[in-house]
Length: 49
Image (cartoon, rainbow, N blue to C red; front, top):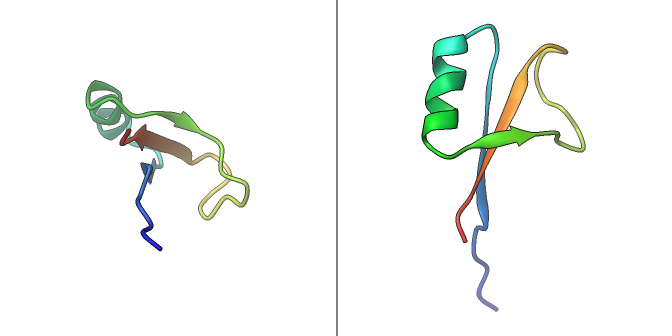
C-alpha cells in the first residue's frame, strides 16, 4: 500500500515574524487534536494536494 503525505504541520510561539512567513508561504492556522506545545502556541498547516 502506498501512503502519501497530504499536509505539513508546524508551530510558532511568540514569533510574529515566523507566523507571517508561514502565512505568506500558504500555511493556515490549524488546531491539532493533541497540542504538543505551550498553551499560546499557534499551529500551522499547509495542504500538499
